[in-house]
Image (cartoon, rainbow over all chains, first blue to last red; front, side, top):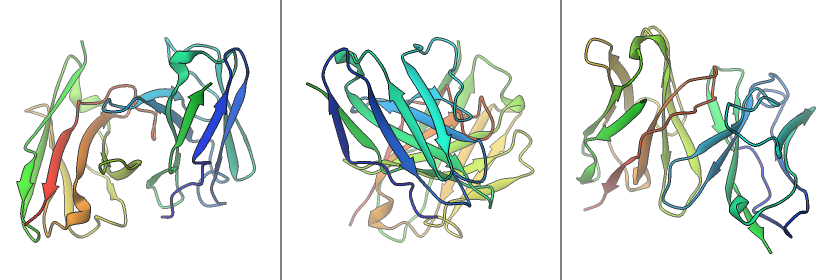
Length: 110
Length: 119
């Protein structure tokens, strides 16, 4: 169960769009449409942003969107805002019925 | 409102045991699968284990398999994580989370319980 691969950090200016990638294998990301994304502020519990690759829970802004191609999933944040600065984690179901997280990406809003 | 409250964390020596609890309220606990997820200080999220709504299916991460056991008591609305043969690398904040969108979409999380494994 190797962790999914995310960039350690990304940055963008207010109003811009950024994309965070999440690369797995054909046994996790590539096998199912069960990728979710979480946002976490330091010292706080994670918050669900996206589930099943593209779906947003109630209350999550439509500035957040998800996609997947092959073994790589992506989270796009459009209209970047200062409050988006946080750590972001992807998460996938696997072929052995387990769950694996990505290493996390620190988003800096310049 | 939905609440998940972890308890049972603390300091334990290497090789020791500890049991975490997660008390649920504000929803019908027996309807939902539950995860344990941990986060070592300054590190990322690591999935620990999941249990089905009725306790019939459980799965574990490689790093805890054979040492940790997830269980639940639906009559007490409580989730458990029995941890044994603890190692310093098990030091982390342990979160319980409700499976709202199977298999890993968790809207509701507890506040976390810190486990420190140290001599």
